[in-house]
Length: 314
Length: 235
Ligand SMILES: Nc1ncnc2c1ncn2[C@@H]1O[C@H](COP(=O)(O)OP(=O)(O)OP(=O)(O)O)[C@@H](O)[C@H]1O
Ligand SMILES: [Mg+2]
Image 1: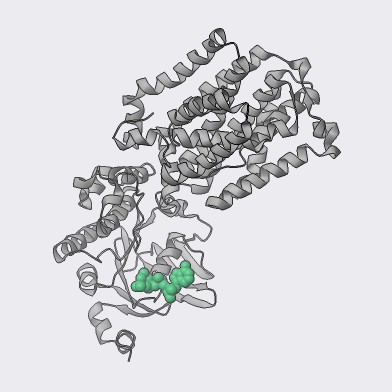
Image 2: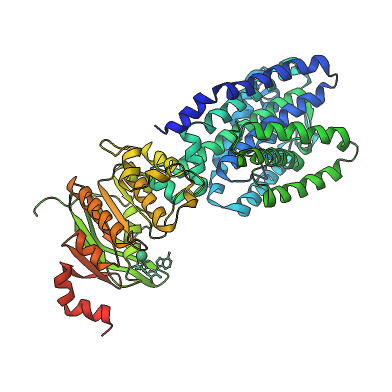
């Protein structure tokens, strides 16, 4: 039953449905009014990544500093799908997704670690992935450090549309999870895993499910991103600052909500583009500090200021 | 009393480091029966509850539930099969409301379970239903543990020191309530220091000491038992 969950979904159906629709409209129209399509595309990519981080961090409390690993492996899955298997773009996406899911399954024992240990070891895992992919010995598969070139499959419009679709679907997924018993079960696990088990929740399986969903989202984002970019290097798609940005966007807006990561991406990615591009290293520093401050002083992000006043935040 | 036991615990051993918290304890409980579990601090009562509910894996011995060994069952499977418990140090989902706490468990409820409202009424928490669990005092949080356990529809309920901190009236009421559960053929193991409370609940008490049962019978007889008084009085 968990009636309040269902009634939430019903009573707030309007505002819940509005969010994905607004995203769909905004990113369908944005290229018509703003000429720098690369910025729009990247903002979308970061929104999806922030939602992927949100799914894991916002609902389970695991902070995945190595989240970029899924992104990178997704991009390389895409590359391998196109270069090695000669698949068309959309089919190659699935290879990227599959790679990310397989890696997530292999790494799922990390979920046994808690807090900082999980954050650090997920980071280490993404570094390992990076070094495997970039290893000259794998040149025949990944082209090693020399990067992927997918120019023969370059489809900027299709890949753009694919990212819009992924963004909308991911947002719907977060809204659905937030408002169903599954989401409540995740919150319960975060609060007290022993009590959650005693309430009949299969803690390990539930956690692993979100972990894999989150990896899938990261992998698909990387795959579409690589497709859209069409030329990239291991250092491009395994860049730690991708994790940092996705995390800070989620934390700033507010985890555990659908709107928080969107808000965070719009505001902070907007700022980053307005002033940060010329000196990105400062921004990494500032955003790194921001993560620390948010975790310490505003763990629920900006939206928690509204929630505290009793407002429903989708 | 010739019915099949719902639960039997046979020669359970649980060690922490080299220390034997449970040292071969054996007991069983039938449907509709309340078993009082008493003993001095550190005698292993909570550890036994933890083993039965699956939080700890025993180092020796067997736990049989409906005649089957449940050693390999994770906690949530035991919960879904009808084993549930409260915690000596209560463990509610603190940021959820009282009602949401109970609803979560009810989501996995078995046939014949109390409804969410029934469980809230039963534990007297209905007036606090919309409060966050963290705003409850410790006794109320224990009652919330109980409400959550009831909402899933247990056949075997393990209650770890519910009475601590309750007044005489509340104690009387809770004792009646627990007995009414047994009347519905639930089996209960009630760990309690408050012997008056245990006396109101049941005639069948097991006294534990140093990880073993040292006496089984009524409290009155226990008081006359030499070993028991030696343990309690330290003589
Ligand atoms: N997780 C643990 N690690 C180490 N020792 C433990 C652990 N749990 C229990 N013990 C030890 O096992 C012994 C039995 O503890 P237990 O909590 O079962 O006693 P109890 O009978 O419930 O006592 P009380 O009446 O004080 O609740 C104690 O000496 C305790 O210190
Ligand atoms: Mg105890």
